[in-house]
Image (tube, rainbow, N blue to C red; front, side, top):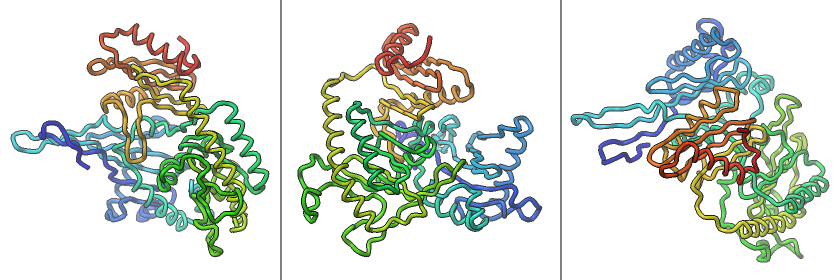
Length: 458
């Protein structure tokens, strides 16, 4: 994972996942039973005694910090070489991630010298408890192994930044009339396909509408945009008049297809298997089938009760009803979006770039990122500026009050962070010879034009 450094004299090694494990201290309370606490450990080939020692150390750290803060034990431990992160998603179930800090390798007198960059780091299985109720520790271990074995391979720590901290949802900007068309489409579909419990609608990987609770939609959105959609990338189909399905009779030709479920509806042996998801786990605990259906850039998620197995007949019905209407709707959204873009005109490159996040509805917006995927974060600003954003966010997370931080960064750059009423705004300005008052005025203008003054009281 080496990245080129300066002048051939140094090279930089990206942050690396050293280990990830899950344990429950209640499962092996007696001496000699310590291994029973460990529910999952990556990498698995680590020797048994080392696993027990590492878990024991984490347990001790958590217990020690409880003496100072009984309700809020340690969340992370920073050392020169590593960072350890502790998370208790359910009572007594602990997840621990150990990450090696980035390293810069320099050469001094012909010998390598390592500098650790200590400040560089910033739904599918139900709850742990439910898994244990279903089949004991054995079933829980199997589910953890199956999920995390694949999931940990998708972690790209070197491309993580502030957007990964927020884990927000990008919403697609729409005019009222097109939004009402989508709302009407969803109502018609839920009426025609009466076993549908929840629906979500996305366009261009951005959310437009969701019937799910916010926390459940956040996880589903992450899965769709970082896992499912990238696996089904295709050249975008423009226009709605070139038929894609010559074999379909009449005017039912459309661009619709299942991203989960049957691959070929004409195959009588086609399997109608859909992934199961668990929502409202803190309350009603619902188990659902996830049906994801796409036409052009529009994707709709239908969630139906897991006790109802979807048949091939149901899938064909869904395809014939949803396909044509979703194709027309996708084309309308595209057309309207292009009209709105033309009306707003081609804007010249602004002097500022920003990241916005709203904790209330999880909305995020970034003009800093040109491209953000799980493995690539293409930001249009220097990594040192991204690091300052992370530092400001870290300061914000320590206090509940509203606040503002202004930093004079390298050369001509200023970085401003504002936190107010559950919203956070981070602005990077490139203004030569600007002073603090002028920078403040520029940020006020941005709030007025981009956020209709919803932002921040002086």
